[in-house]
Every structure is written in structure tokens, then in C-alpha cells.
Length: 303
Picture 1 (cartoon, helix red, strand yellow):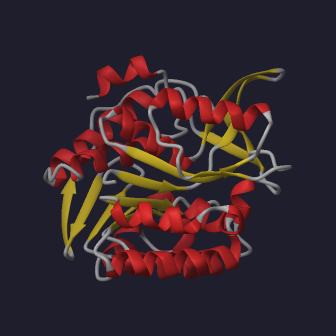
Picture 2: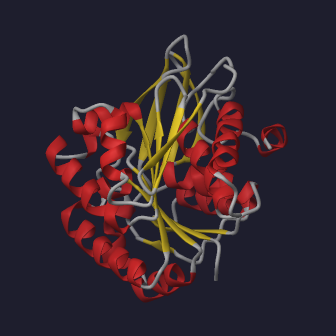
């Protein structure tokens, strides 16, 4: 199969534009990265669960088809609707999220999916990508099953990439989230983490945490709030400066698109400096538009 298999969730995105107006889209952290990876030329399949017969699940499948993201690992959960989230932005484009996802079908993924097909596809992938958000949503039982899959993949030499993407409201406690994420990290070839996530999750400085994680994982990308990036490879840090600033309209999807740019180069064997530059370039385009997934025509300027 090759390419990338992402496991996560795609939700209905309500991007508020006023007190009584909004723009509707479809997004989710792993899904966003999958779309941008595909636009950058990397074959991608997305493993998730959607509803069956509702217009929102149909629209997500239509979007996947339009973007060229493989849907062969999508399973359907009758009677469920995709999760929904709303985005509110401040004057600097920084966003606040509000979620409705208690009945999201991805919560049932390990009960309704054809796991043999999912595992077979992941075993043949160049990279499997997951984040802290689906890790939270699937619950304790789902995490146990996912961990068994990740252990199998690592034993077979499959590359696994993980982004912490910590959302406190999705977890029963910070301690539960930290334990779950630190259990995943030793199975990974690459971990990407923002300073905001790491410091809220661990209550420790980003550099200190990244250096520790780099003893468990060959490559750790530490993305600081000032947009400088430290890439730890085999424990040695390469510190790269921030790119030129851009005026952000909406920072939703900034980290997801950065990861897509980084991973697209990483899969081609590019050095960290090129990977980081590609990540910044894609993210710079994304934050200048509303919503997590920008019009595909805007990608031409991000290459």
C-alpha cells in the first residue's frame, strides 16, 4: 500500500463569523494533516468511523473523494452523527473551541471497523499517523486496543508519527492524558508537540520535556510559541529560527498543516531544516484563511 494511514476523526466545523453567522466545513486534526499531505503529493488513507445516511457523513466522504484521500478504511455506524465543533477567534486569529461529540461514531471504531483490513493497511504503510485527540476520544478500552496495534506495527518496522494535541476537556484528568501519551511515545519514530500542549500537559518547560521524550523516540519536533522549532534527533537538538511573521486570520489547523509539510519532506528523506521550512510554509498559508482546511487553490503559494 505505502503512503500514510491516518487514524482519527472528521467533524462538522462551525466557524463563527459573527453573533448570528458562521461558515460550515469539515475538519479534524488527523484529517486536516491527511488532506494537506495529499495536496503535497503523498498518498493518504484515513481510518475513521462516520454515520450512515446523514448528510454530514455524506459530505465528509464527498470531501475525501474530492481531495483524493482514501476512504477504504472508513466504517459506518448507523444511528450516529459526526461530532461537531465551533471555533471562536479573537482579534489576533487565536481560537477557542467548543465541542459536541459525545455520540461521535469514532468512539465505536474498534467495535464496528474491519480491524483486520485496518491493520493490514497500516502494516503496509510508510507511516501511520495518530494524535492525542483520537487517543482521548476512543476511551480507555479503545486505547488498549490501539496500543496493541502500535506495538505490532513497531515490531514490523512501520514508522509511527504522533502529535500530542492535548485538549483537556476530552480527558478525565491531566494525569490520565499524560500517562496515555507517554505510553504511545516509545512506539513512535517521530513525535511533534507544541509548547502550549506540552506545558499544559506536563507542567514542565517544552525543552525539558522534549529532551526527555527524545530518549524514548528517535525524532522529536518541539514547536515553541514564538514559532522557533527544535528538532531532537537521536537526542541531539537542532534549533531553527522562526520564519517571517504573517498576519493570522485563524490559527485553526496551524499545527496540523505544519505537520503535513514536515512529514511530506521527511518521507522523501529531506533534512530537518527543509522539513521545518516546509511545515512553516504550509502553516503560513493556512492561518491566513478561515477554517482548518483552506481552498486547494491557495496551496500553490505554500510550496
